[in-house]
Length: 352
Image (cartoon, rainbow, N blue to C red):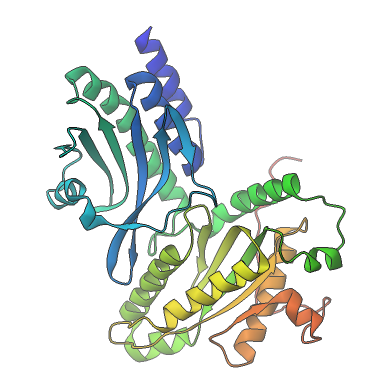
């Protein structure tokens, strides 16, 4: 019976093409198969030179919990978790830690290309038995391998951010979530007036004068700037938001569940974080940001709106955040303007 249940969970884990659902599946398997009362999937990220961790999903009170705006976590320094630090420093696949409160924690980093961006923390009231470890190892081996496959197909190899080809699926999910929360009968003007209602937002971000960085300092320093900007992006947005590298020096952010004022503040904070960052050898780097609300329009239309706002920012001084609808209202942009400086490619549906 137990073997059948284990196989069922393994089938469930490998049946997903999404990190969030994969995390939910592994937490559910640990809850049902091992009786774990406390476990977390944690992500590791850099912020201002510090390595931080924050939860993506966890087990609490016998239930699987996920991040939303009510329980979002800014991150804690990894040094607060010496067991995890030691496990990574010794390059181990797992390490058990006896804590002062009598609990036992099992740290399981997920290694990918000699780096760790995800780890699991599993806590038990008593030491982990051999049987518990064997069952967990079976579950976690599949989880590690499958997460690596997903990362390989979904992530940009240089920055570790989501890549361009994963955008359509993530965008479609946000559209579906938005249509469930907000009536689609609102006019564009009515949607603009509801600035105090939480919505979804898309931003296009471009590193200012990036070609100059490559020309003056070389492509190695250019790559380092891309990696460091990606780190600032991770630190500036919540784990439920989605950050993509579209290629070159261009990034896209899908910001979930925020008012217009909050969205403007978040994008401004990111812009300021980049401007204040000391990039090795290069010095100061700035970014321009254009963003638009996510409506029932196609990805091409919404990307085009955000891109128009971005190019307005770049044409009018750079190092600023511009909102598409605000530019329209001020007569600085026109809704029928065509953006010819950028092209968006979307996969054609297969079949007839």
